[in-house]
Length: 172
Length: 72
Image (tube, rainbow over all chains, first blue to last red):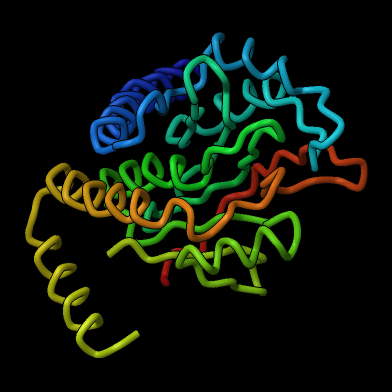
């Protein structure tokens, strides 16, 4: 049984890994901002994170490289992206589909305190692409960290839902 | 939002629904990228933007509960 579950997980990882790569590729193709790109999360992203991991102006003390392994193991259908300006990491994001995949959650997103580029806009391109390929009809950003961030999401077309403390945007 | 814009968006979304998922993603991304470019200086992103489950020490809380809220 354990072997079957492992094979099933590997198959999901392979299948959804393809969709993740495709969504990043589509988002990058649409992007018009020079020297800016979106990628999956890898060793280069972890290395670039070290530049601002101890920055005093960070609003959270998240250790992304430590958090990632359990997220990856639990969620083969996960969403993930890193955003870049040249070789500087703008930020990270990770999420997962809802149970029936009608929605795509963005569970964690953080922008470097040193970056001026729009991390949400870049992340949203990849999020939108992945959600569309999954057949989801909405995306939601979980647990905005403060009112400024929540207001920003609302200005960007999201609607705040106090019941789930999330900001939701329909994509079709 | 004016009725004209609503009508345009409704018509645009109806058009998208008829496409394959990949075609829909491409078309939607093209529109989003155009909007992003046009609005890049209009709304400033908050410094240190972050969202996610966090404990009182600012550490990440990994949420492994299923989300059954599918019927939006």
